[in-house]
Length: 281
Image 1 (cartoon, helix red, strand yellow):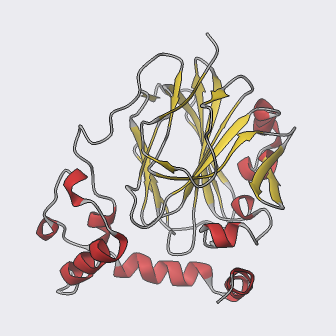
Image 2: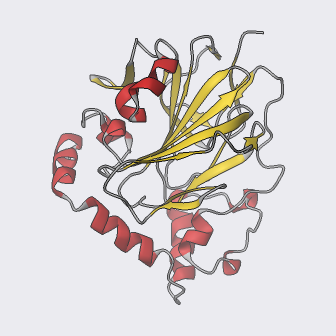
Image 3: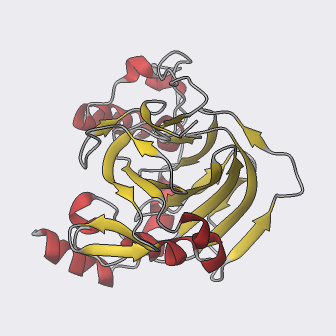
């Protein structure tokens, strides 16, 4: 099936219904769980040597395996108070400067920071700022970590569709990241505001954070905002802040001033904690 045709077929799919079925299946403790995990490791070349628990027999269901923790030494986090590190394993989908309010999605496709964040006032912090979009494939480690140290301000759950976020779909569905269900987490850092957007996708109807647990499902039909500015929820650079139950995409937005590492380009494989750029002193 060609990419444009696959994108067209997705428009007619019952995204949330299919994803709820996957949610249920991946948490079933059945005799098939172990064979499916073994097949998945072979098919996607999963490196279990990095896992804190490399023995598949210790995972009670598929989702426990899929969201597995890594060994403490598996992802060293780049040091330096001005460093910006990768928030997740995956590949660069896109990165660079935000043009006013417009963020690059893929060749011929864009969206706005205002639509992505579902908040025009918050988006003003990132006008002409910087962004990076990291795509997590099925084989990747699926926990999301902080690219810089920060204090949590707000969490915004934005309902939406659940299109696939694989590159072939991203290239053909306009403003996909601003249309899919997503969790917008905004932080205060010494370098300015930071937005981390965890974008849902088909089969990825479950997103959780370390402070709120499972946020979706259940999926609300209206936008919901939780204000944490009166609390003191802080994270160090490289500390886990959330996870995807099945693969998806994370987008980081920062104000103008972040200097990306030379040669950072679409398709480049990344590891969580890897140095991606620096802030001015």
